[in-house]
Length: 136
Image 1 (spheres, rainbow, N blue to C red):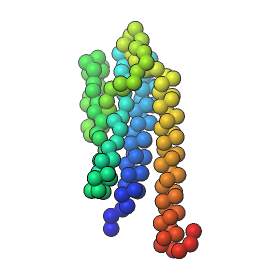
Image 2: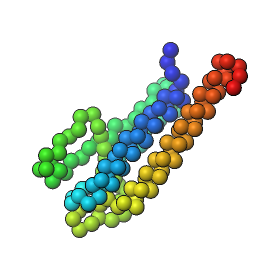
Image 3: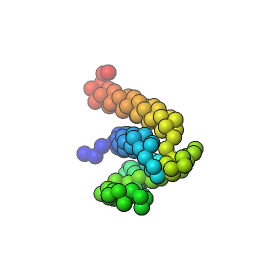
Image 4: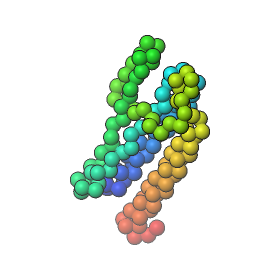
């Protein structure tokens, strides 16, 4: 038995939000690292749900390592992916473009989106329980 497309979509979105939170936390941790470039996770694609295939597709983010990061021993993570953040407001003289205010705003967005997905999931489970048992 396959799961419902709406539940697959919520699960995929929650996984995407979890990865996005990890990337934003990494940005915050590297806010004082010279040359560090802010990163962001690519938005998920729900085209599979729209075209009726029922398959939710998540765009795989990509990691772009700078030469400075490679010289410090950074290696390309397997299977992970991150893109450089295009919504930057400033770059410091040392080349770092992480703005803590922007990153904290993103954390707030992630928290609000995750809360919305959790509430939708609870509502769906409640509706399924009513459909199966006939009572709430």
